[in-house]
Image (cartoon, rainbow, N blue to C red):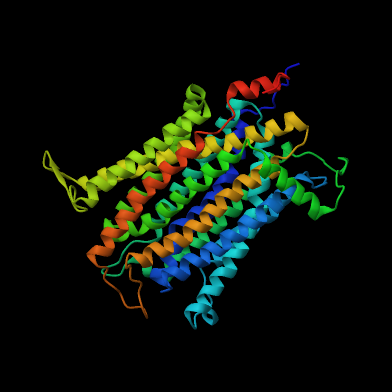
Length: 484
């Protein structure tokens, strides 16, 4: 007998995706502005700044598998997911403001600033773990059909980019307008204002997703407890079995590598806007907003590409687009073929040629990532279903947490690398509030790392996903009761 997979309506997918807006405002705000805040405003050495962010992401990577196990085994009137989503969501909303507000008592030295930032990042990441792992597992449970999963993850990614555009992208115009010779990214008050707005909006989105998805909760108080060895040993057994499963292996390798490249690029691209291209505030909003538009279009395209070329083929197409677009940026701007201030006169009007070309290919790099990310998440949901079909065990929380673990480990590693890159290329940070001038070589090296190394890491990730073993045909055979 064919096992009919659970699915959900487009309306349910849309309301579920509101939770991604909360995640987006917090994480994209951190990825976009934290390194600027730590270095340009607080004067923290880039190596210490990268380490502060890296330690917190490493903590998140360690705690997420635990959260997945706890969520899967929770017995509650309100279900396995929603209690943690509420608690974690409100905690990360609060911390997303406090992280931009360093008390005077913590400003006595570089180390005092460093440890305050570590503490706030740890609290924020704890909240994110409590919210995001159950939230992702809820999506696995809501939609079980092969193409529906791609649609759900694609819509979720579109909401991520919509919030990213309305928040971090528009922050350049709303909070970071340069005044005279003072770069707005060096003014600490600008970050306070941004953090307050983002924190309030995050809390609203958390409450909305709780309300709209609560009908999907399942009272699990009557579910039999399957613990035989104690909590810790059960957790270790779960993780061992999931990590030993060959089906997700290449998805995990892929997501680690591709996320490492994305985080390095996203951490450095703000410096590219500020120092390499020297964009004014409105052009920074266009460049940064173009990345969100690219990601959203990629997520939209991912649904059709997955249907036409299956999931693995769609990921390969997305990766190829990202690689080619970043190499085009290197060709145009690192060679001097197009100067950062280049313009083009058309019919009496002056077109900012450099901005147009930069936005097109920069957005193209993120369009490719927008194709890859939601499909790879849907791949992990397929893997979790294969496990359920073969063993009868529900491990959506475990599989989603291991997938997120690979992402967080990549983020932790690449944030340190981003800090090392800034120090290694000779990038100078303000000392005692004094402005500094970057050398031409440091600026050129900044472009080299962002464009060329970003493309190379993306290319390496495609070598891994080629070995992903699950296809639409294989999953359908399993559902029909046949061996794979």
